[in-house]
Image (cartoon, rainbow, N blue to C red; front, side):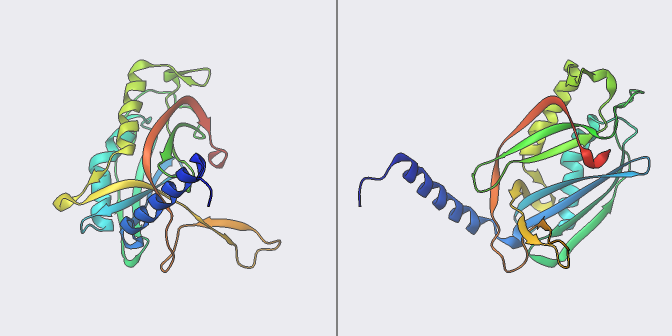
Length: 231
């Protein structure tokens, strides 16, 4: 064999890294958390995925989310946004699931809120090229904090920075159970009985090997994004 190129060497190192991460992130330790909020009659969902260290559970993860993430999320939202529930389940254990009803909501008392489809966007960068970057978009931006679609208010930006850091940090449940934020690659499939055939994406199921990326960085986009699904 000839001498290996730098690109080939990086590829092999990256593949070894994948195998190492797969052994650490068994399906039984991966959780999906659906954070549901509401504005008037319209539901808003943000999906989070976590990798468990310890002997935690879906119920424990719900408590950890409330303790570590709910307040920094609500801090950037207008009080017209209501918290509804957390619905969490383990990808590798059908019996490990839990739903938690929430109260409260956005903590900002400004009177004018941008339309629901306008949101603050955070990009979640993965440590591996095998998984595309993730994102989190939070509605409930108050109008005074932006100008021509760009967030300009320094105090509001400081709260966004607090949330940016929280989104990339592990959260802690009972007995020091740790839940690391991760990005789980969705599995492409053809929707049964769709005519014409239509593809969709789902999380990996029992018996499948998950492709998972740890969080390399969380980036804040100060330009307000628009979500068509919330129009």
